[in-house]
Length: 348
Image (cartoon, rainbow, N blue to C red):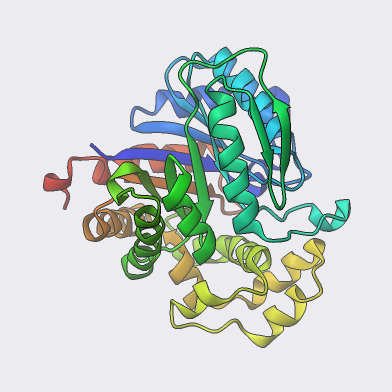
């Protein structure tokens, strides 16, 4: 069976106070097809680990994901502590996706140096630490000296890597429990990314089958297709900002970042990203998002699953201005998921 993951990016829940988070978490669990609810870690919105804690306390079945956690703003040892705590509270339902990060870095004066190496070292530290071992590690980016947790989560939480970059895709293949390929919306580019993951897996004596594999797409579902496209442009601008100046993933799609978008993003001011969004072309939305009617999104998701052979898909839900969060979740759970969550042999 296909595993369906739902993520709620920070802009989609920016207007939602913590007092209203409980019904959202419960609503996601009540949608029968959802395997895991992923909690956004974009700074400086409401704190991810606190939202996960609330979710753990008001749900019983659904998995609880943290995405993404970087090794720069928070030391991987502290991330392990938080993850283990939520895993214990949720009785083993917590998981985390590691990534290069970027949001909030300018405010904190953080420079993202050698992200692939930093992720490799974070995984090298976190896996044994979460298994109850004492870890001493002198890395090029990260250091751990006699580090240990004073409690051990059982089972060890799964560690994903969420990425679109070539080097970090290889790191995922080498060391991660699972890879989240973000955010190619077409099978051709997703397959290219999975080939790079496989290179990393072979380097470590593993196969692609040793990892769980998810394709993760920013998704906006609305009967008004134009409104769905408009609501998706900001997320495309954000992913272009986050990967700057690496444009290999854009070149892979046969596209070129428009000059006006590049000019704004080159200033490296995250607050200016909304200024770039109106200049994002439709072709970029098509390449990096699923935007449109429920039928359109279901068709594209089914095509992705069929042509890539993956059996996990993550819908990171965006909202149009006239759409409530409840409506967006319901449209996914009741109009899209039934069309894509059948066994591979039965997919339309």
